[in-house]
Length: 130
Image 1: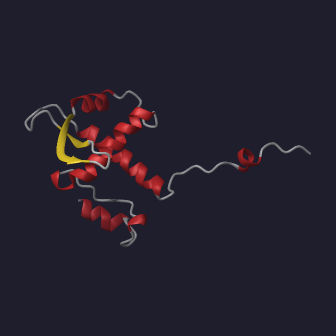
Image 2: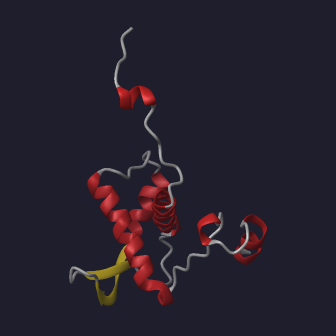
Image 3: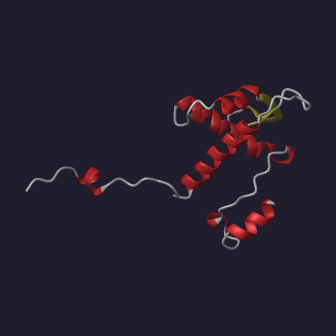
C-alpha cells in the first residue's frame, strides 16, 4: 500500500519533494528509529512537543517499553526504541509509534524549510511613526 501511495502522491524521485515516505519501524532500521524516539523524548522534555491529553495516545505511550538496540550514540549513550511489554501483549503502542513518526516527519519538514513561519515585516522593522 505504501508503494502505491509513493507512486500516486510523490513527484518523481526527488526525496525533498516526497509527500509519502517509507519509514520502516522494524529491527533493520533500529538506529534510525532510535534517533526518532530520542527526538520525540527530547521534544517532550524541552516543551516543544505536547499533546491535548487524548486518553488513547497517553495509554499507548504508557504501554511502550524501552527496547535497547545494543549500540550507542555519538555521546556514548545507549540507544533504544520502543516495544510492547511482550509480543502477545494486548496493550497496544500503535499510537505511540505514530506520534514518534509524526514528530519525525515534522522535524524533517522543518529541516527542508516546510512549515516554517516567517516573521512579519511589522515584527522585524519595528514601529514606524509618520
